[in-house]
Length: 442
Image (cartoon, rainbow, N blue to C red):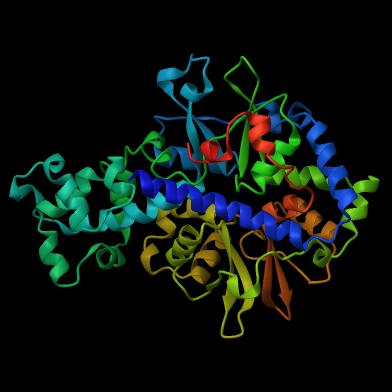
């Protein structure tokens, strides 16, 4: 177990190192300019970064249900929020006060796995007749339906899995009725289970925030440097960084990749920014991902397949393409999972719902017009400044490089931030006093 954990930690950090090495090897910025920028960011305190809208960080209580958490994220138009431990609300230690961060990525992981387990539970019509308690057969159930991931230990699916086994899932599997196959036959019953019946109805944020964690909770102090934040948001793949004032456990600010790129857009007119922004993206080595590595989804593929690809490839969005020429026709992002949960009456056949039909349904409700349907694109000779402007003003997280409507590259918020900095030797070990490995794998 310990060896497996060490392997995962080493792999994650190696990936971060490889990404940043590629970034810096491909940038064509003069070394003195790169060093000047990095030094400047190292001198800017985090406290100088603009506050979140209304000056109040949105937080979610750990005992909030997942369904209610989705509503909060959607209503506040945010992708994630810190999770407060109600049992330590008065603690002065942020490690006790906050359990982590809930975001759409964690919710997607939970929904996909819950869908399969719920499907098997629904097929167990004779569960109660067997006379076995759900708790007694929960572990066996997890093995029987091949649920070996977080759901097997999170506690939220024990009753469903147990009931499934008690109802004779083994016989269903023998005839091809395993979890994925059963899930394919789900329709309105899925929503009845996940939104109206136990244990899914009462599943809380606390139940999934650890088991389905997409990224660690790593705060910085108000007197930290912006360089530390930029490195966390770029090299180390975090999408948000909470800011905590020394001696005060409450989160004072919440810096996201989007906010940073928006801040860069606000630097237009300053000599250092204009000098870099005027350069073509090729001078920055963009795109960092080769065309044969691009993950896309056909418009006639199932929308759940899109979310599965995001989960499996650890990405937040996919270009929607059409036909063998792979002409780009749309975009689907991980936050779109909220439409499935908030508007179940629109997606009763969600297991058979194609990406194209999903997008059309969302547009027909008047939500996300322009953001879901129209992909934001640029050309290979576009300037970095134009890319930053598109990302900031359109409030999107990625822009697709196209050549005659075919996607040849992707530029993300992470990529843009990486263009402006490099990491001085041993920066994190010296700056924080403990290793990046310990931070990112806590």
